[in-house]
Amino acid sequence: MKEETTLIIMKPDAVLRNLLGEIVSRFERKGLKIVGMKMVKLEDTLLENHYSHLKDKPFFESLKNYMQSSPVIVMALSGVNAISATRLIVGPTKGYEADAGSIRGDLSISGQTNIVHASDSPETAKEELERFFSKDELFNYDRLDLDFIYGEDERE
Image (cartoon, rainbow, N blue to C red; front, side):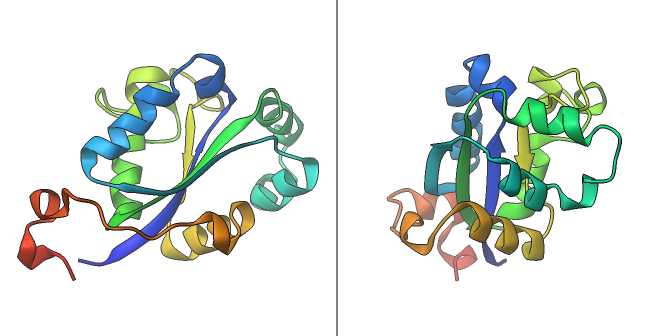
C-alpha cells in the first residue's frame, strides 16, 4: 500500500445545495486525511488549464459557466491508495449511473452538475494539486486514529 495525495473539487452544486459537510464527512469516515482545503473562485485561465482536454468540446462554455456560478471548495486528501479510494467514494461521472452509497449516486442525477471532481491517476493528482495549491497550503501532520484505520502493519 502506498500513501497518496489527491485533489477533490466540491463543485458549485455542492456549495449551493449546502452539501459540503456531508461530502467532507464521507472522506473523513473512510480514513482519508485533509491536508489542504480552501474556497476559491475559478478564473478562466485556471479552468482552461484544468479542463484543457475538453476545451474543443461544444459543451465547454456551459461547463465553464457552471464552474464559475459560485465559489468551489478545493481539498487535498492524503491516505493509503487515496486516489482509488476517493474515486470509489465519488462514483462514476454521471450521477444517474453511480451506485447508491457513492456521493454522485446519492446526491446527483446529472452528468455535468455532478457534485465533485476527483483526480483519476497519480500523474493527474500531482498536476492538479500543483494547479490549485501552493506548497505552503498543504500540511503534514499525524492523525491520532491511524492505527485504528490501517493497523500497525499496513502503514509504511
